[in-house]
Image 1 (cartoon, rainbow, N blue to C red):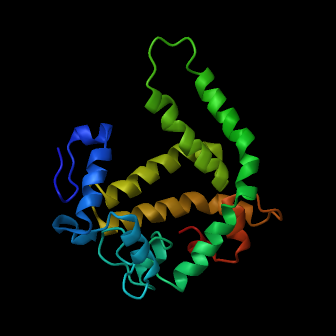
Image 2: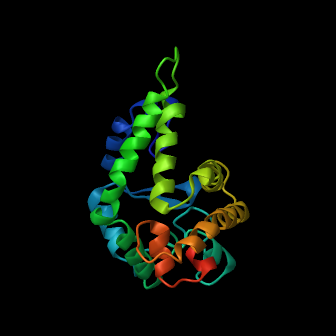
Image 3: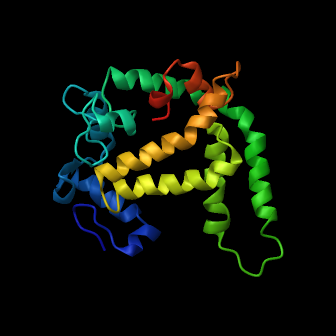
Length: 219
């Protein structure tokens, strides 16, 4: 079951498309719990994203607005919660790290990871595909593309879930800031190591080459 504000019952998780269609049909709706308007049509979304004078991303996380220059802004997801011109430079840096030429060399590693996980399922009477493959592979791929050591992937997953929890299940700005700080501390050693590498092969190499200071670069 679902209603006009986008609330959904468990069955919607199995097949969300009828609800998506209903939400597109109704257009823009105000969601009181989030104190925000929900925009569902492609043309409307495009208009919102392009009109930076009218619409701001400072409150994009649903938490209290994060103003530029204050403590949360120095700690949190700056790319998501910033407006031009700050956002423009950050997005340009991210785009530089995610070109097809930069990502293509990772394909053999990703194939090898997938094969290793699948081979590990052989001979088992029962398999939880989500826990044994669908969760492990994305985390391993993200860590590899970032340039995070394999030994840190479990902690990276834990902190990712912690950040997500403070944004969704139990919104908490201070908890979110603390989780981001922990995430930054986890990335700091790998970022420092990346700074001494001449060739940019990982995302952390690109960030290190950008000239950002360590605290700013780990956000």
